[in-house]
Image (cartoon, rainbow, N blue to C red; front, side, top):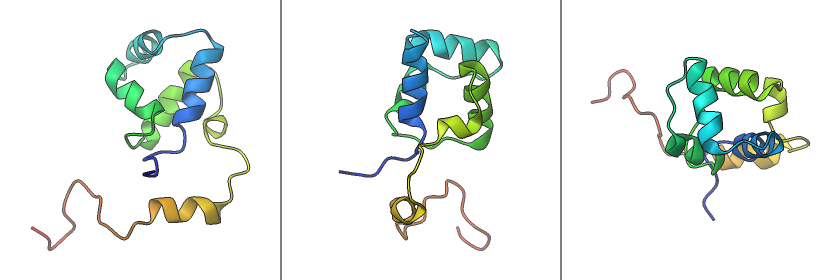
Length: 100
């Protein structure tokens, strides 16, 4: 199984479900706060199929009424987490200096 591209997706889904919100409702609430997110993008976030920039964490925490720390899994050892995100392959969207 391919590792997820973020670690917060399951917690976002859990907090959304606790509030009884659909993905459409959460997306709408996020849009009202200024983040133009689609239902599809939110679904990918929850399924860990896309990365989550830090500014999006702020929107999610505020709209869900939780702290940013609450979005991260509890008691996950960093030694277990690290290798999932250190593939050795370059994943940057933009080339580094000197690359074309």
